[in-house]
Length: 264
Image (cartoon, rainbow, N blue to C red; front, top):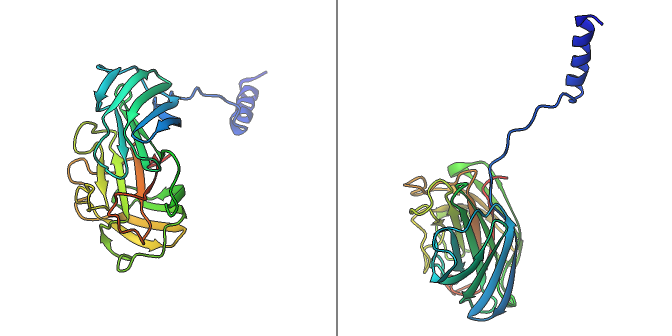
């Protein structure tokens, strides 16, 4: 067989996608696949399972601690972190005890893999969800950076809060919390936007594009976005906490929370 025949044969393999080039290894991104909760009000246990959690950080296991690498917050008192006991940590499973949340509260858990330099977050609730608490089913994003658009779908959000639509502002109905994977342990871990009541909002505002009982669309960030480490980057994890437009609790009760990455 001459060289032209050999080259034509290789061309067929290339055209059919059969010429295999080894793929580059991807980053070891931590991923929380499940959080199993047990216990009762004031003393919950969470078993967090997934992949790429990394080796146990220095000082863990620990009692009555607030480790940088594992942050647990009750939505009713966020961004204050819960003092917890971390009784076990492996690359695929972490056990936390002594979570002092009330029955039905929204709960968020953020995990930082110090070796990989990346984060993941989970949001749900402990115990029985109370009547009238919104339910978030999906969060989708488009765009990036200051123009990141976030669409929150679910039920129980209520009618559009008066005077909020079309405004780039804060409100007592929604908080966006972002864990900046490039800046753990600084003001960027996490930073918060949109809620300036009892909870810390870091001064970053959100553009409210639309709000119905089943969908809320946020059209990016405004004031003070980009200061310090207050940026939303592709490797970051974030959570959205939402209260119904009828709520007068100022973020202390009745909220729902869900988390995902800025991009997938």
